[in-house]
Image (tube, rainbow, N blue to C red):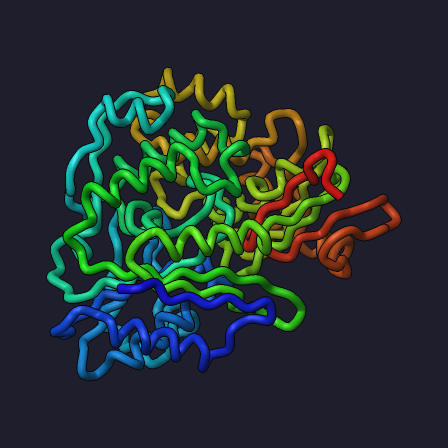
Length: 422
């Protein structure tokens, strides 16, 4: 089908999005008896993917049966209340499927060692099984709609497209290999870029192994301000054209360049969206390029419950902590439990200040020892709210000095303005 897209500085409204959804459905394969919708989970609360899931569901039902498979990746399953709040109350509970990244996948094929070495630019030479959820690969659906937000990302460079499938609905081997590759390449170097070794790996796997699936990608680019979240771009298509367009818009709208390094940066994590460091450490990933040497990152995390979305990963994070990238990679060579859980290795590398800046998590008092135990500083969330609750997005002048405030780190990337640019 021809790619359908629309971009708007002010943001598309519901009716405009609905018109585009209807156009896509008109071009869908026939007969259209069963459809699988694959949206991101609640950790992408501002993606507008919930709206799109609702629109597709309402337009297709009841003539076409729709199931919904949230692209959890390594994240914990969503509650019924979270599903209803994000995707709309119109979707019955029995239509939701739950992805299991450890046991619920099938192997579509293998990226051989030689190909891996070429794609990784010589950084990694290993055989990588390409895994996909059984629901997607063997569900027998007439149409599969992969819904997601294009935004700078710490693993792949720019999120979405095939990432929604190979990570959001993928298996442990492929997830682990892709996360390690991002670290070996240099995740700071890759963030905000389209063509990275990890993206090249996803593109290769998609071209080689997804050709038989009736896929539609529904991609968004969003921004937020005091008025709420805006759908600035919507792209519906089968190939890479929509993703390419979305990347260009996201790089323009979702990357914020600051004129000078941040000595103190305060980042707020929405309570119902961020309950673990596994997703909450976007506060670290997305700001670190703009943090000054010797700087402070203060993370307001009122919803913090634990470190890992998965209990096995949580235990490993508690055991090894955010002890610095180089040390984590050395430990990986020594400890089999880390070699078997490379996404944890990536999480620990990406979340470490490496002695260049400090990270202070502000949580409820019962979590103080846990936070300090993994190498972060700690502050009581109520005290932090007293100190920083009145900050506005961007630069703030305060009694303790200049502070840069970010209301949600998942919405973009913060970087120093390149030399010579005004």
